[in-house]
Length: 401
Image (cartoon, rainbow, N blue to C red; front, side, top):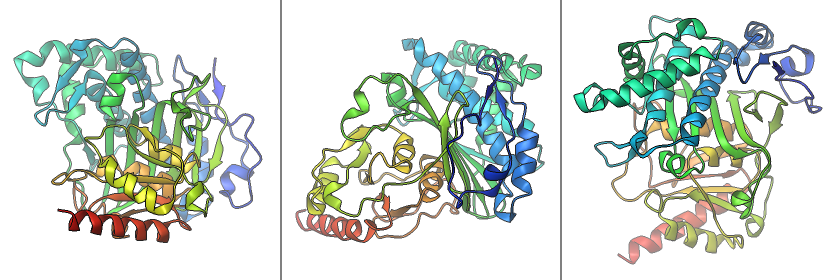
């Protein structure tokens, strides 16, 4: 049964985009057939609004791609087998879902937005799958991709060969940069969380002349209710969130099943003692002791909320917490796909994303972010206090060496 994505839409403030206030259009989305039957109408409505809405077609395609990829990932996570988990050369885990998700997103974007200069910067490549030892895994990935497409609006392309899937995965080999448009994808951000059965995200962004102009985060295990405090491990009836934003239009959230749409905003907390903060679940991903020092200087009383992936950005964008701290171990280089989508989701929700020196993140340099020490995210009122605490803690860390 088709679900109207915009049914029971909460009353929106006048600051929200005109296309949402003035168009009672319907975008049908079937969880079983995955039929999108209103993308043309939403694109028309968006395009007629203002120049800031010029990414309507790209947004519609990105939402389709991320939602379908989420379906594939959910299927794999429910029946995860040890044979579905492999190790890359950097010893990080990669699953059949990472590859399948990347193939799905690549295929949907290229089909929905035909372009001779299509560019996708993505995390995975097909190198290991092309080896003899990877043939069985490749066959499984191909079946997963075809099964997902067969139950969607893309059933006409659900007879892909293994070579088709390899080509789709390798469409993500672009280097990005400051010229033209580049899609940026992490097919499963938080693979370790995925393997544990916890949080992960399909994170898809779009760069235009080096700037992030669009972001979609599909978070299949993130509760629709707030995860503030220590509630992230509680029992929730409804999980599965889709966050999306385009430059100048704000950030929105809806359930992955495509129902009610709401606008979200970061926490308005001004008192750091009342703030709660997010950090990476894995200690290997961020220096928890440094985050603890910063929290103490701010007077934060609540314990950290530790979850995997860019789901943190989504949760922060709707005010579940007020601060996100990420301080990787020395020598680690941040990749653009780990932050592009999350960055615009937070900034369009009224937040600020910066490096440890307060500089905005620069996504125009290729696959890597050149930044100072770490990444900090909060609202505009807390940022000056947070920067001060970060500087003091970093100085103390250096002097203790």
